[in-house]
Length: 176
Image (tube, rainbow, N blue to C red; front, side, top):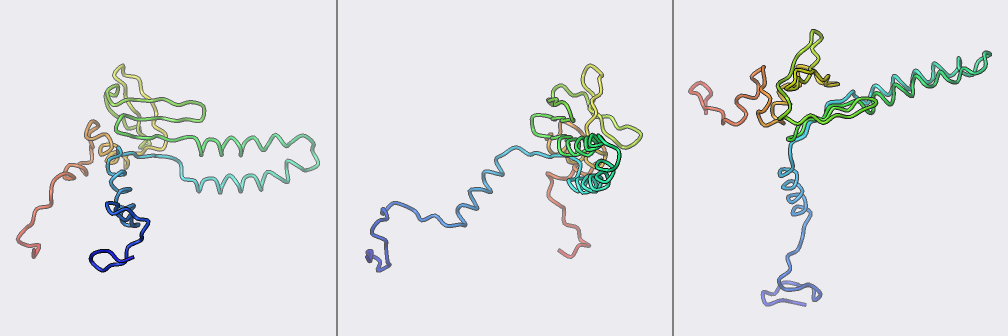
């Protein structure tokens, strides 16, 4: 059916209805992601599971060898896999979530006094009552990311995030 402008129009479509394209859907998805809070997840890389799989292969001849009842040796790779999959620290706009092998703890930004760095470049959260909570898989190189996610509630000691909100200045030597 032709409309008043001479273009083909589907008779089932309503006149006020807008056609939806893949670009419209992608743009809406980007808007939704931009409106969501920032989030950073620090965890042990999943490639560590390859080493655990190799451990299973190495344990198999011993577990099923001449000595009976050594199948309990499979508990070690299973425990290591649970540790790798479960252990993580998640930083959101609300605070930190620390997940360990057997527990989970929420640390809102308001309850944190600051972050402490150990001798081995590990990071600990210091609460207002001076207790320290280890942050698994977080190292000193991750502090700028935590500063960005926390929206400045946790300062970045490296200074890398100081100029994030500012536009770069043009200099005479840059040729611009």
